[in-house]
Image (cartoon, rainbow, N blue to C red):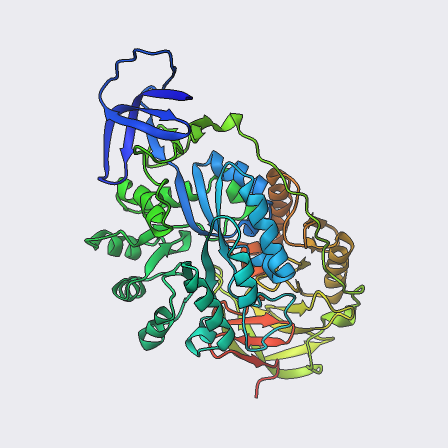
Length: 553
């Protein structure tokens, strides 16, 4: 039997929240003895001297989407493991919205091959809404859930983003949730604005968690009603940390990533979110517990989450618990340098069928030239929340003068560029055009710009690549091909991050004010993101589930 003994460890006990000096042994990939003090060794065995480093259980990300990093599961696993993440619950609803259950199966199957443990959450909202707010590219129904639930390591129904439909007792979303409950799955939530009786109704259907932007008031109500509250980076605010620190029981507070862009994944993963929480005042060992033992309990993973006998020997060592930068990573007792990261060959084409764009495709929809009172979606530089304003603007050749850009969304599977063009205020873009086939969650083609020529060049280059991200400003043409469905790439993380970084830099040089330009632009067509977004059918009033025209009445 293969056995290793690890000496001189500062063992982080996330259960009692203590640190003790000691040793542990690993046999057949699991912790065997975990003891204080020194050990007498009377047998030939491999010895690993940890030299007083902290020994931390592998981090567990209980809510995330691989596709947000624009990479395959193989490439994601290489990066996330290096940062100490040992297990994730992936909800592949981006690939699902383009390829349906086949996209889910591809992501799950490649995930299973990796040394990082991928668990599956079956996407619940494909298409994202059930109110005819956009033209969908795929669907997943309760019968598909019955099929996918038979796959290995499926633990949950993915986030029920269409919370209006669930609250209004939409028959199909209820059947999806009921199918998950029948098979003993967790039901993941997404309810940025629900409270009171509507929140109770949402929870009553079976939903048990929420990961959206938190406030103390929101967390208090959700905890009182029995939910697990997932804290991602955007919710790590002083008032939230102060509230969490006052809780006598934090067992239902988890730290998650949700979406990690490629440039961030190079530098860190869940460890950076935990480190930021610690920096803002969350006690060190308690914050680590919310990324280890607590998500293990939530996901019902009995063999992960702590350094304890019988659990899988997944851990990392580091010098400073406040930063959590791994010096070495061990998966079931094996150093990361000895691990393989197999790839599953993709059989997916881009699935984009649009003919070449012409300049007329980017003019405002149903808006004659002249002085017009229009509905305008208003951006902010901090997050993805958007508002609506009625503005009197001067329209010339289908574009508005002033701090406005045209936003066009086009159905990716229609030969003619069938879509809608509306106005966005406050982005700050002075020159150039951005085009992307990665546009949450339906992933129709998104084009943003100030002039038809630039928009046409960017959009047609996107079509030539078969999908990806493009920026063109008259002189620079920057592009990131996404070969798999226009959603993810088989390229290395470094290549992807470098290309996207250049595009974001050029957006900022040309005036874009947002802290995270790609993240903001990619959710402009997310028809469940508060409060007003764009689809190929019009401006979407997310809360009321209605389509609006450009012309203000």
